[in-house]
Each structure stands twice: as C-alpha cells, then as structure tokens.
Image 1 (tube, rainbow, N blue to C red):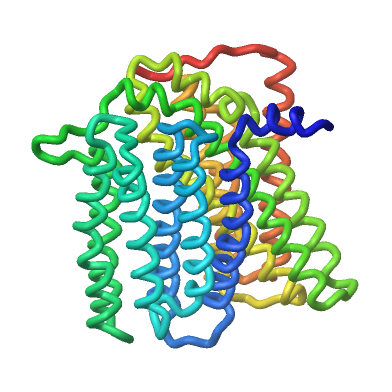
Image 2: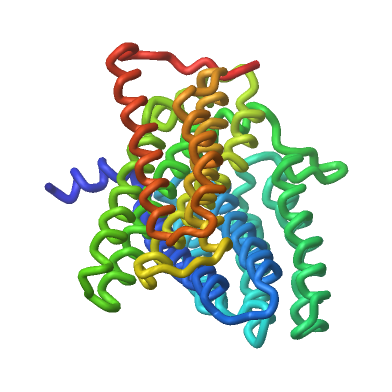
Length: 392
C-alpha cells in the first residue's frame, strides 16, 4: 500500500492506534496482577481482587476520557498528537506501577494518574482550543477535585486500608463527572448535541479497544503456553484461543458493528453514549476475566479445585454476555435470546462444576459461547439486515 493509502485507512488517527498498542502492555500487566491475586497464597483474596477492580476502573477512565477528548479535536492537529503522547507515556508509567500500586509504588501511580487527567485539559487551555464551551476548564475542575483523595490516599496511608477507601472516593468522583457531563456552576455541562458529534468516533474507539482486549487474551494464552510447552497444556490453550475468536464473533454480530450508526440516529445520543461507557466496561471486564481464567487452567492443567478459579472461568464469559446483551438492547431495543440462554446455561453448570477440575469449566464455557455464536449465525441467515433502533 502507498503512504497515502495508509493515511486514508487510519484517517489521521495513527496516534490513537499507538495508544491502543500501549494499552496492550497495560492490559497485560493488569491480567498478570489478577493472575497473581488468584495464585499467590494469601489469607484474604477478595480484598486483593477488589483492589484490582479499582485499578481497572482507573485504567478505563484514562482510556475513555482520552477517547472523549480526542473525539472533539482534529486528529492531525499538533495539540491532539500531544494529548495522545501525554496519555501514552503516562499509561506506560501506570502499567509499570500496577503490581505494587497498593504498595511501594502507590504514590507514583496516583501522581501519574492525576497528571494524565489534569494534563489533558491544561494542554487544551494552553493551546487555546476550547473545543466545547468551557470544556477543558470544566474537566480541569473535576480532575483537581478528584486529585485530592488520589494523592492523599497514596501519600498519607501507605500499606493501609484507608488508601483503598480514599481511592474509591476518587474513582466515584471521576465517574460522577463523566455521568453528569462534568458540570461546573457558571460553565455548564456536556450537552446532547456534543454526544452526537463525538458518538461515532467513540463507538469506533470502543470497537478498537474490544479487539485490543481480545488480542491481549490471545497474547496471555500464548505466554502461558510457551512458559512450559507440555502436551497437557495443548487442550486448554486451544480452548482459550477458540473462546477469544468466539467473543470476537459474538461482539461484532449486528449491534457491535452498527453501534456508531445507532448513536447518530438516536433521539437521545447522550443517553446511549453514557450507557456505552458502562456497557463496554462490562464487556472488557468479561473478556479480561475470561482470558485470566483460561491462563490459570493452562498453567495448572491437571486441576486446582478452587471456587474462585471457577468464578473467573465462568464469570468472565457471563460478564461478556451480559454486557453484550445490554449493548443489543441499546441498539435494537430488544435482547437477543441467545445471550439470555447462554447466561442461563453458564449459571446452570456452575453448581455441577464446583468440585470438578477447572479444565471442565473452561470446556463448558467454550461450548456455551460456541452455541451462542451458532445461534447468531442462524439468525443472520433468517434476518440478513436490520436497522438500529435504540430505545427512546
């Protein structure tokens, strides 16, 4: 392909592709932390998993806020490229701190997170790019507000549950700003039309991140398989790869492919756009959990009867199907029966597999996802075309 052909393909958004590649590293480090939560001998595991979930929420906020900001400025502009580079470098530092974010590297994690979130509106203000009425200033106000519990939790409470409590407050503030459109008295808030303008780009960014996340699970599978290349690891590695392909197929069936168009035609694009934040987060979490579950099975294929392992092996696909069901409702105002049946099947096999080898749970999850994909394919043949019709 010519250079011009590549630029046409990327539409000037090469920087966002680079950011996604950095997030491959970020998600890999996150998955490794989650694997450590389930394999390291600790007295209490659930608090460790809770900390990891809080870190995932922070990572999601960084990515989705960057996607929102870059959707409001021209991709070829130097200020846009600077915003992406700033987020890329900060995300790389965040990834390095992830395993010890609640330990020795907590202050570096918090300072970097605050620098990313506050730095983007500062860059826009210095460049005098008020892409939306007072938007950078409003973002900066909320970033400064949440910076207090982020920094205080890291600086004042090393190795203390109080750090988790303060960081939870900080995450709540960040997500409240996102939900309510970063409202500031006298400066306004994000309006419906702003969502319509940014919606198509955001939907495309969601699709790209889902592909990146599924690709990360394949990377995790390959790493676990290559760590010790033995015959008993072949079957779980094949199941893991098949599951990744099935999730890709299920996600992009109909609603996943037309999500951008649905935002454009929605009577309330702001409602659909905000809902997409949560829906896509659930889907990403499900894909990551599924990848971690299969990686656990690959590492110990001969069995490790741990109910927590079963929770992540079956819970990951369940979260994925639940998020995908919600996405289908957002676009077509109905829920696909295949997703519901898949969720019921996962719930039904859980009691049977509690005291069984995790390999059986992995096989069951793959078979159930395969059934959902086959149902979708059969439905596509019956109804070859369908227009998005999101609920009012």
